[in-house]
Image (cartoon, rainbow, N blue to C red; front, side, top):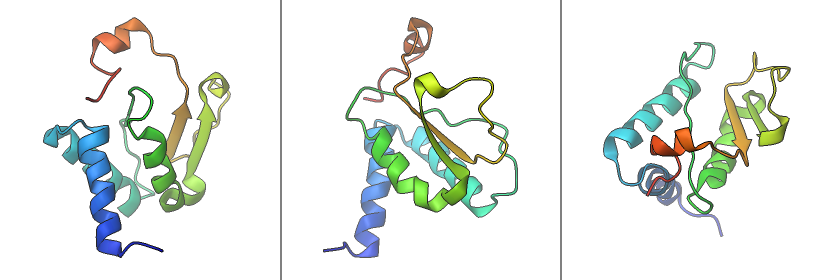
Length: 115
């Protein structure tokens, strides 16, 4: 049975705020602002990337599944080994890259876990 829209929205916001951003409200507001701009003004270039990384089970894939229908043809899902310079990104608004091994330099910046 489908959930009432307000419950679904609340659960999605909870996913972003608590699971993806680890309860860091400033990070959550940034993610929500980035998504709002991307969805409300799809023709306007966004000159920065939103990188969400963390251990298995945080909710990265769940968030991608929620966002994919909103971005439509502007959404692309690839595996880490498929990313290369030949990947055409001109028409991509949201790129979900799965299974990317992070180097220790990214882990040192706090990117390896959102908790």
